Length: 164
Image (tube, rainbow, N blue to C red; front, side):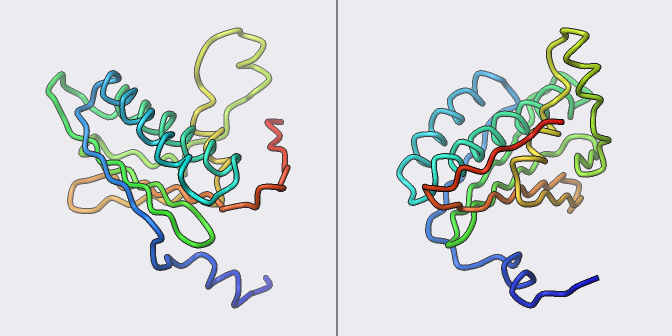
């Protein structure tokens, strides 16, 4: 296995350029408001359109999964979402007190089967996995913490993400 000092340094957190935090109840209406605020805030950052769109998509997909599936009761819970803008990437950190779930170990879906069945859903985690540079999960003090990293990319970068 090749080892690259630059690659190792590139994955370490750097001094943030900007940071934005939200704490919301586990309700889809609250997520819709935060998603709009996040898209507006991301628009002001010096990142490629693709990086900003990818970050917004990651927020919508991962937070909606947390709201829909993390809790075993009907009580109100809090979900924290933080975006950290660094020189070379965006980091989106999700923290919730739902049941333990590591999306990085979630098996890849059978995309052909999902498409042919004409059912909605089932691709969110895989989509975020493919648009991100990395996804890491840890369980800390009774909380799920998922960190999604998205490369900054330059405005002229036209890399296409394949779903097959």
